[in-house]
Length: 281
Image 1 (cartoon, rainbow, N blue to C red):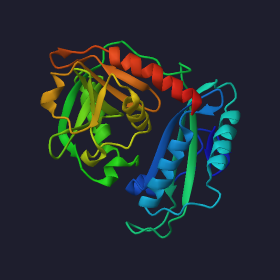
Image 2: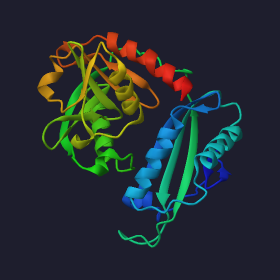
Image 3: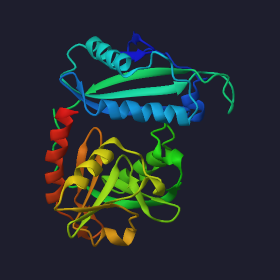
Image 4: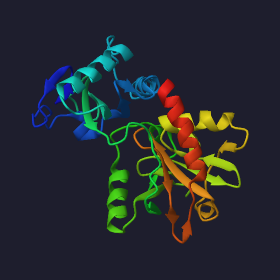
């Protein structure tokens, strides 16, 4: 079952049409979250990011669109999907309502809630091979829109096809200055000699929730020197570790880039700390 504006609909129900602005113009946002035992991981952070993004895109935020309201709608959707399990992937999408061309007729919005089962209750380190390559066909712009979780993901789609065609598990995206921005579906971190780096938002990376949590964790650890700084592709083969982060997977170590293979010691240490704050958030 899918929740569309509070109505529970079968997954095969046609409730969007050709006038949908998310389809026509990518005029939409989404949040993807992990939920375990009725608890949404980092829910307040996801909610605040969504509200801030809606304001930036000049969407009208309904008065009832509170954290409590949306959480209840998510729980209602889960209840309607009987037997789906206790650990879930939740996607909350918001799109501007139908009408208009580039200029909308209204800034009012609609929302969609979808849920799907996950295998693991908490974040775990996957140690299977995870090889990446640079995707250089198209570049990410260095502006605020690139930091938002919008439906404008065509570079991610084309990059994912490139990765699949060439036997890679992921690709790293570059901005117009040829600096590493992120992977196709996650933020990226580089470890070298006890120093951890991640690209700054000014380089065009997604303002990721787990990225934010990693920065909070790393800033408090005395055994790591952390900074938000641009990452050159030339640094990749000199790194001790590379890993990517998102809200569903948590931390995913990269095992290989070209001829360089990487460890995962730091990723494992940070994952334990991420799980600890996920339980408390």
